Length: 102
Image 1 (cartoon, rainbow, N blue to C red):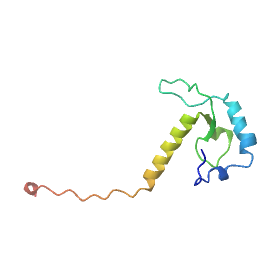
Image 2 (cartoon, rainbow, N blue to C red):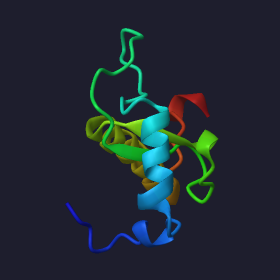
Image 3 (cartoon, rainbow, N blue to C red):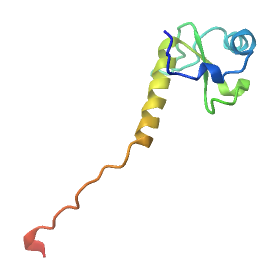
Image 4 (cartoon, helix red, strand yellow):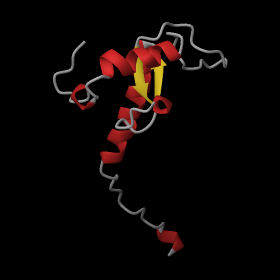
């Protein structure tokens, strides 16, 4: 599925598909590195390579292999946090004091 509005792919280094991505998948044994709720490692095959932290840091320690499901879930959670941070704070009226407490 291609996203027309995303520029993320253009931000990747030129050797991403030929060198970096295959190296990370091989390092992780072509298995998803995410952990399940029971503490075990996800048994699914890794299809994506994801940045753990800063997306401009393409070092091996900042990359992990994930299955499509875990990658989408992580991306959705990160997007929700970013959207919440951009949202203006709620404007609430100050609570009125009870007339008998004045």
